[in-house]
Image 1 (cartoon, one colour):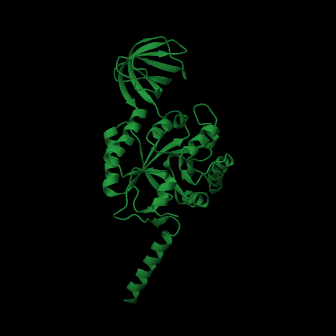
Image 2: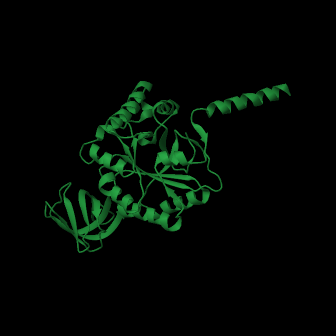
Length: 311
């Protein structure tokens, strides 16, 4: 009997030690409400030029995870844009200094990536409390170092966050070009009263086209008539049958049979079909939440931790 009691005490000790640094029980109960968070990784310029307007139009906020070496470079956010996002209520997250696979680094290298990214952002006058792991890669060493500088850290995992969670291994779903699937994640989070974190990168759109005349120039503005939509050309591609173009959606909604014209190049084409438009998908996800679950809160990572009672 003494042997069994001793074994039980050892198991209890091991369990308690494992939970000291990362596992915490939230205060969510049967009366609490589920949460949704939107995180945009890397610090792409579309956080400001596209996502900002989407969330502002719905009186909601999101998070921008910043790789600091990419600040103030082409197609990425500027320091002033970051400041405006924070003033709008967005949370600024660290996404390391150079976006490495942290699991492949030494402890001192991880320390440098996590400490410098935080200090760089704070030197800009920004508040930075939480981290996003590049490539969603982490391990025990990385989590322990993250705990020295950040309140929490997010990875992938394609799971909802439970009421007892590891705050240095927050789970998240990548936003895909499948609106019904994304809505099903929202449904599940609501019914199970859990925390759903979505993550995304650059916001763009892909169109199947025909009757192309001339060559579009990367970065030039595009005009769609008669719909009146606007965008910025990024690159060309192909679909199963025929050519396609990618662009950053800025204003309006492109429609089938629109004529697309490049402002600088003068190139034109006809829009045959919208393959996907991430701006509209994200907007529809927020509208879906508001319409079907008006008591479901859209929050930043830091606010989510507050509501879960995580210190």
